[in-house]
Length: 97
Image 1 (cartoon, rainbow, N blue to C red):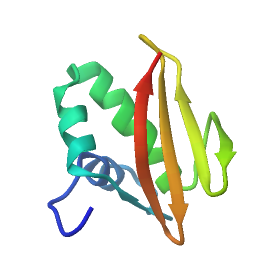
Image 2: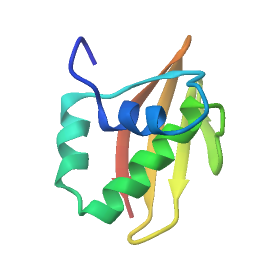
Image 3: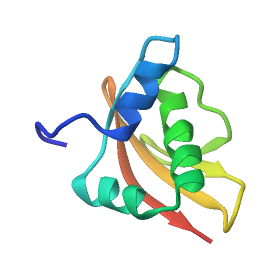
Image 4: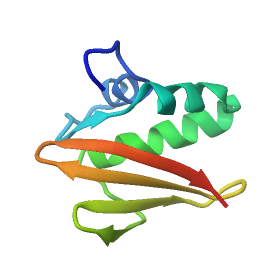
C-alpha cells in the first residue's frame, strides 16, 4: 500500500476507457497471492477488482460498516473483501470456497 510500484489492478484500470473513481490499494501479500494464481484466474480477479474503481460495483453486498464482499462465480468461487476509505478502496482479503 505505501509507495510501492504499480499494482496489477492499477494497470487494468488504465487499460479501460473509464477514469477511476476510487484508488485501489492492495498489500504486498495480496499482490504475491495474485501473481501465484494461474493466468486465467488472475485476469478475472484483477478485472473484477478494477470494476468498483470505476464505479461499477457488480455482484457485491455490504458485510459490515464500509466493507463489501465482491463475489466472482467461477472455479472454486472467490470472495473479495474491500473496505472503502474516502476515495480509496482497500482490498482487505480474498478467499475461495
